[in-house]
Image (cartoon, rainbow, N blue to C red; front, side, top):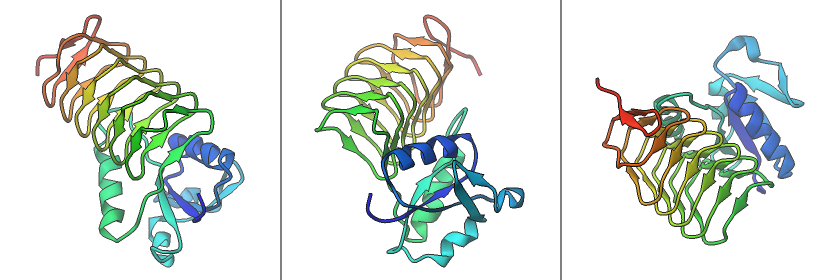
Length: 212
């Protein structure tokens, strides 16, 4: 990662990203956050240099950005942040922790993040601004849409499709060949054995759709 990066956000997910970037010998120009109380603090020795507006002090050819906003539910705010800075002409760096196992033919979209201990097997396609979080397992030929969060410890068996803007909660399992629609929420620990429609909430073992 030759061009310096700025991490947007100074919360827990940002801390994990800073660790991954440092482990990859990336040059971090600083962290920005909209909370004024965080300015001049540090994360793992990297300073919070100002609010989000500080990004405007750098040209789009000087730095790339890293989306440090995580999510515990649908990742809409994370998507909005990504689209906001893309609209200003910025490019997002993808982050792959050195301990992740990623097959050489995997396609990784702009700004996506594959965290420590994750495994992504051959034939997978990962969209833009995706999180494949700590120790998640994505098996062969899975397709993960844009702005998806695959939370820690998730297992996607082979040929699973996950639609845009979906959240698969911590420790959930999706069996082979299943399609999970866009904007869906799979609760932590659930086991998904049937296709999930767009916008559905699935919970339990086996997973059942929560009535709205």
